[in-house]
Image (cartoon, one colour):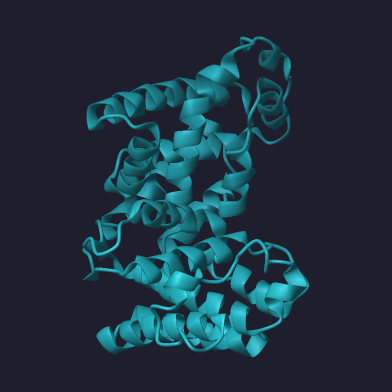
Length: 321
């Protein structure tokens, strides 16, 4: 940036004005980047340099001082979050994000629409400001022309991203629901950087990264036993792999080595008693529920390429143990 003097002209309450917009745009970009990678999505990430971890970090900005620091050191990253988030919020890709916001804030659909309109109006104005002061990426004449390249890449990406129809609708018992919640939370909490080869292998799976799991964790947190629960194929893959990872963690020494045994207690006695492994150990109870769910997925979708790929990835995880 030629001069950072423009940063000093931002009002002292600018972060307060931008906070909701930054959060909403960041969640939208995380939803976008958590989709199965393909060539067009890779073009978007190449143009913007964004990753799930960098979006998560930028979304943790919590003060005016932190915002100024980011604008002074990596303004392009924030620019790209606002740009991609704004594009995503205008599509059906944002549906799960907006549903999550509505649930969290306890507001109506009309209020969500008003909030989205306000946030995108603010981001649009700020993007224009950034284009006046922030140098473009290498190889671009201006940030405005770079923006056109990103928008064109997004337009090419969008047609293949129609909302996925449910692959299955399940009705879960309370023990099954508890086990799936436990699996998602455990995988979400695994250290992103660790010396254990198994944890390194888990971290390489984009669908099991923390940001990719958060909306599913939220959904299962509000799910009720025996209610119809529609699941898309990407969600089934996440659950399938999360359950497998959870099972591997419970039957190996990973729990003890990471000190997770107290943070993630095993099934409550009443729920363990409801499983076929009631007479066995808690680890057996977990193993029965994991194998029961994964067998159901494999039996229900024997020819689905997504499940076959997920199973192959799980087998590689097992090798890392």
